[in-house]
Length: 463
Image (cartoon, rainbow, N blue to C red; front, top):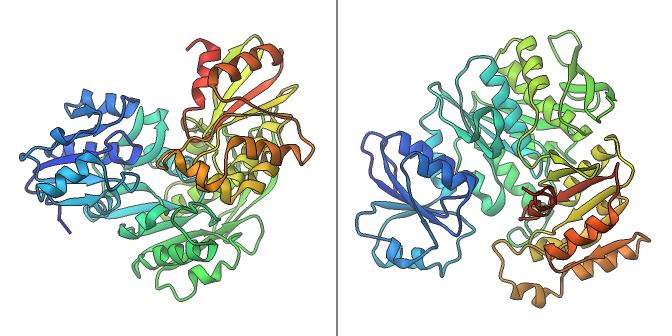
C-alpha cells in the first residue's frame, strides 16, 4: 500500500472529495503542504470550504480529470469499480488507497488518536468529545461526520497530539485505523449489503477492539449483548458505561425539561455523583454523554470543565436540528436512517411540545430497507402521522429496488398493517403540498433520513 510521507508532500487526488470524511482528510493534507484536488457529483458545504482553502474541485467525475501530475489518489468504498476516474487511475498506474487507509496513516502522526465507533451516535459523541477537549484547551484535531457549529464545519486542525475521529464499520473501514483509545457505542445489525449478519458485524467490532495497544483503553457500552465477547482477553484497559451500577459509569435520576432536554446524575469511580444537564434531546444522548465523560476522566480533564462543555453542546447539524417555524408548525431535521435511530428520535420528540407529531421519512438504500422492513415499520409508528418519500438509493443502483422487490410502497403497506395511517408520495412537491394542506399550528414536523429529505423542510420554510 502507498505510504503518505508528511515530510515530502506530493499531489493527492480525492475521488468523492465532498464527503464528510474525505473532505476532512483533504483539508489535513492541504494544511500539511500537499497539492490537493478532487471531484464530486455536486457542490456542497464541504466542497465550498475546500475551495475557499485553495483546493481544486471538479464537479462531475470524468476520466479527463485524472492527469499524470497526480502522485496518488484516495477513494471511498462508495465509489463503484466502473467509475471513470478510478478506471483512469488504474490505466495510468497511479497508486490508490481507500479513505480508511489514509485515515489510519494520518492517525499514526498523533500521540493520542481517539476513534469513536458504533452503529449509532458516532457523530454526536465525537462532537461532545470535541466540545470537551476544546473547552479544556487541549487544541484537538477533530474529524466529525457532520457539521459542528462550534468549529464551523466537519473538521478542525489542531496543534496538539489529540486526534478524534469517527470510526465507520462499513466495509470494515475502521480496521485500517491505529487508535490508542477506542469507543464502542453500540453494535446492531446494519449495512446488509456488506455484512452477512449480526455475528459478522460483531466479529468486526471485536477486531476493532483488538487494534488497541496494551497502554491504550477501550470505552464500551455495557448494554451491548454479550459484551464480554468483544472485550475478553484484550491487553488494554476496558471502561464500561451503561444504565446500572454494574457499569463503571452509569446514569440515574433522568428527567426532562419542557423542551425534552434531559438532566441526570452521573455515577463513576473516584468521583462524587455529578449532576449534568444537556441541551440535546433523548435518552440516547444521555448514553452518548456517558461515553464522552468517561473519556474526559481518562484524560484527567477537570469534571467541571467537562460538565460545562456538555451543557453548552447544542447538537450537530441534522441531529434533531431545529430548522424553523412556519404557520405555527415547528420543523426539525434528523439524520436517523436505522430503526433504532428512528425510535430514539421519535421518543425524544414525544417530550417536545406539540399537538401532532409528523414524520416525513426517506428510507436509505434498498438493501437496508429490505433487511429491516418490519423494524422500520414498528419504529415509525411512534409518530402520529407518517409520510414516506421514495427510497434514497445512495451507492446502490435503482434497478436493485426492482430486483429485491422493495420500495416505499412496500414499507407503507407494512406500516398500515400495524394499524397506522401512512401516506406515500413519489415527489417532494407532492409531499410539501400535502403537508401544507394538513399540518396545523402547534404541530411538530420531523424530516428524517440520510438522503436529501431535509430539502422538504427547507422548501416549506422558503429557504
